[in-house]
Image (tube, rainbow over all chains, first blue to last red; front, side, top):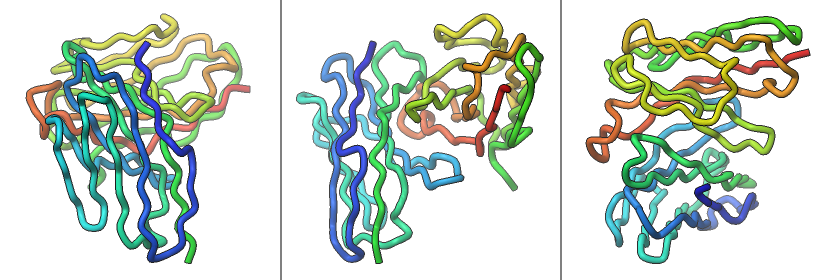
Amino acid sequence: ILNVEQSPQSLHVQEGDSTNFTCSFPSSNFYALHWYRWETAKSPEALFVMTLNGDEKKKGRISATLNTKEGYSYLYIKGSQPEDSATYLCAFKGWAAGNKLTFGGGTRVLVKP
Amino acid sequence: DTAVSQTPKYLVTQMGNDKSIKCEQNLGHDTMYWYKQDSKKFLKIMFSYNNKELIINETVPNRFSPKSPDKAHLNLHINSLELGDSAVYFCASSQDWGSGEFGETQYFGPGTRLLVL
């Protein structure tokens, strides 16, 4: 059973502050790490697919880094805005897994005005 | 236009009934998936089809049967519904099943909230 863990489970951020949170995954058999953003009552939306150790991806104020050797990825939100409030999911894919993603439990971010 | 759509959005039914959930994608993707959001809110893969062929079949009761009439549709039929089947079911699609970074991104439907009474 693959262990994909996200911490913290939830966090409150003041508008304008920056924040980050972690996804940890198995460091062996790594193929790709996905990040999704999931707003309440909507569908998960893809943010990034990361495949190489040391990868950094950026989309607006959101960025992510990847360390496949130690099995973790950070997601950063710079200058948080209320519209950033959502659950952020990471999902791990190993080799020979077809396109099976194993999701973490998510980090729920609430940005307070 | 909705990229990945599911019907119905809500489904309330009695234990023992048989029901189907439909999923359609208009993205021209080859691969489709069914996920169950469990009681702890985790998304767990149930099935995946690539070009109408089953490629992922997780440990799911055989009361659950996926059917892909064409690569734009993946339906989920559930026989003899049980209380524990109550959950949100998400359909998703991707360009293909693993040829690279862009092909793998999965696009999710809005979910079907199933309540078994």
